[in-house]
Length: 328
Image (cartoon, rainbow, N blue to C red; front, side, top):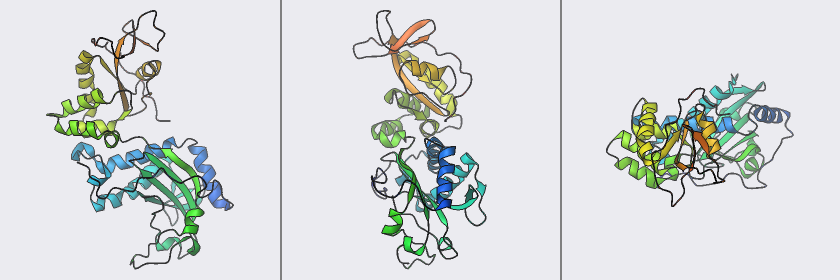
């Protein structure tokens, strides 16, 4: 199980007034505009971050879901995976000397679990001042941020004893970050935020029982595929969901997936809308003709969200799914 040892400092991101919102450096400003044009709301960066973290947890094989369950080597590998997923999502070209090119400008991607704790390598300041794409994320606060900074001696603390020449940002460096995205919501790590459910999941007698526990206990909240894989410990996590969908109908529960018409039905009930790789469960009850409540028509009947005092009855069978909703 997770522990407090080795847990990153909780933070909600850069405070108001910290750093800058735009840059007088034309190349930094070009990169900022390119990123915002490609991802105005930060959804694509959030997706890449979630995939990178879930890949290093590797819950299907290891049963892990928390940063404190990783080895030191695995934590170091997160930065590489963040770089890979960002390049995959945005199709950035390879840089000439650095990680990738954005708007024709070389950029080096730097990840940190602790805000302002990026390690800047010598090649970024020893042969001309290079631009760093600085990204931070925190599972506990479920926030992330991404900024840009042209690295120079003035932006760095004095060199320490590290043989690799890596250095941290100085106060001036932190103050000169141009924030492209501030205090953005991460795709939540369900099990980090529901340790009570995580314990029940670990105590389950089988993977299928663990998956049912997830959908039974966490209703009205998006659950991503990695959580199901961690609970189910099976290659075919979709089968776990299908089996849970059938079994939990007896308890009045529906599990909506990311293929139409499920997202539209979830929206009609006022639930979060599942996008690719996500699910949402809800307990439902029949909706009377005189009730002025959100409802979805399923199997020819009107259904609404269950309320305290309602009887629990068998839920309807959801229709087959067709086309998936994307994450954007």
